Length: 110
Image 1 (tube, rainbow, N blue to C red):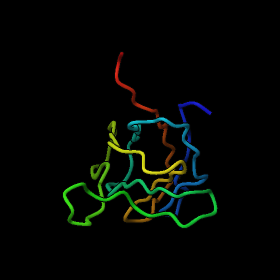
Image 2: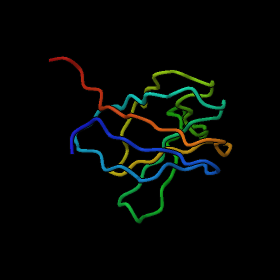
Image 3: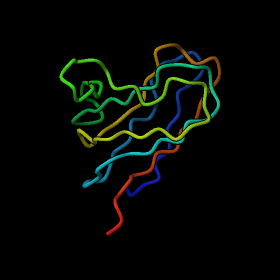
Image 4: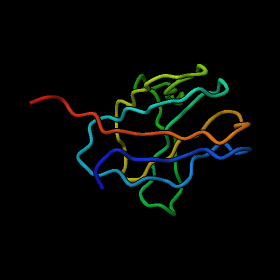
């Protein structure tokens, strides 16, 4: 399914549901971050919807997870790489309300 993709982090949780399948090739993602409690928003990737997911880490070799957004929003967060066909969002703290996200594939103009 081509973008936009829709997912949400439910109240009291830290992980979005459902995981989304991203049509390839997808060079980058833009996440529409609504107003929410300030939390370190990260993107995780997996090989299938039921597989283990792992966070995208910074490209500097430090192993530090890549933070998409850490303020309270609203914001447009850019994920510079799509590492696998399945993705989900996570936060460092549980959300106090359900937070919905729209995710778009970012492609360069020809």
